[in-house]
Image 1 (cartoon, rainbow, N blue to C red):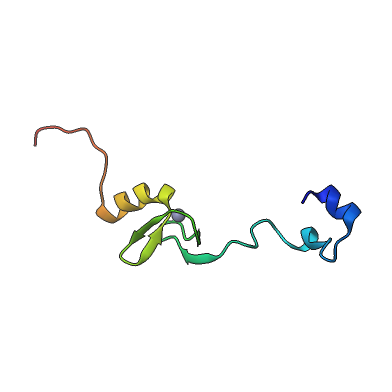
Image 2 (image 1 turned 135 degrees about the vertical axis):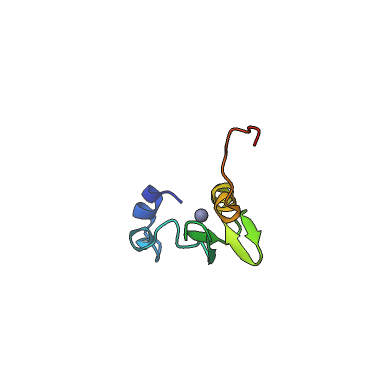
Length: 76
Ligand SMILES: [Zn+2]
């Protein structure tokens, strides 16, 4: 329903848009190990030993945890 319809139709919940954000329906299931941000139900993220890491955060998180650094290979 568009805002215009809400204004002119005036259903009983016509002012919901004033108090609700579009994110109110999102269910937070956990928090990201890397950034601490919310993990929402239904989103696709990495699950690591029972904890969650955002798909976007996973690469940085894994490098941190594994202490991996991108280096130029050379003979030792
Ligand atoms: Zn994250």
